[in-house]
Length: 395
Image 1 (cartoon, one colour):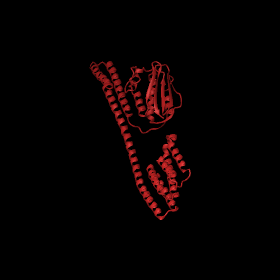
Image 2 (image 1 turned 180 degrees about the vertical axis):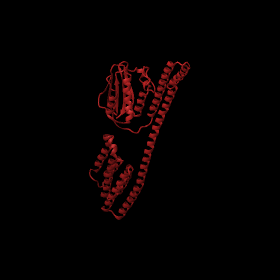
Image 3 (image 1 turned 45 degrees about the horizontal axis):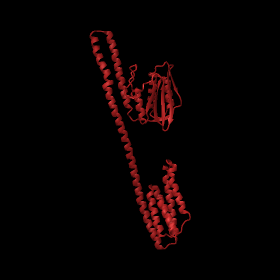
Image 4 (image 1 turned 45 degrees about the vertical axis):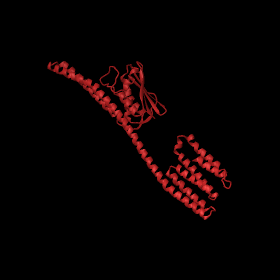
């Protein structure tokens, strides 16, 4: 619209000798429109919040300048037609009820002042006043209604967009739960089936030992049954804890990670285990229980799978762009590269001699928590030297 306004102003001032003009006005508005047009390229993101007001003020100023032209040229028909174009074009651009109302009221008051102070005949006066009054009334009614309708549409669009995001989130949750069901089926068919098979065999042997009254073997088989039952209980508890991570926890809070990790350091540090926090850790918005599980599982793993006389663990953090990168480094036995993906899967462990309390749930749970908080987890490791687990979280 700006080039049209300027072109009309330039035309009536340069190709009609009888017209009166405000000296320098054409050049002034040309510069004003140019400045307004380059603002988005200068301010970029911040212009979004106030550019509507800039456009409104420029259009309002140009409309009042057009009224001055009407007045000093005694409401010449060319200026009236030009003002019609300016008036309707301006309203079309002002997609805001407040702008429309301010524009219509101020322009109409200025028009009345111009009419009452102009030396025009009664017929011209009445014609201009009646035609412009109808224009202003219809514009005020129709455009306010259309603005209200646009606001209503905008509100409906926001509701629909919110629903779309919620549906997408639910679809992602369902997809994740389906994956967990598949993993659960694998657990039932393999991880639970093994101790159940062992229990069945042990009961058969126990029955034979009871018939033979072999007390020594009876006691040994009872201990084995207790061990297998405990292992099944660990597996079931692991499935439950892992599945609960699917629930969308809305209790995020500002968690001071430096204090949280120092508490874990006091809990796990011993004469044979040294934990170092290399720098002050940041405060982030997250569910406190979940981030506690992540650090706790990583530190426990570093201690559990350590073959050195003194276990050394370092916790560190760096920030780049919109993410924090946390790391837990140890001097343990290390992990071969072919296992770097496997260890994050549910109930997957390396073939290392450990107690029956290890069921392979900690890292898979940590991965699920980090992924659900829009981060990722990975590791770097060298066999016999140590491992470093990294995970990222949004700033």
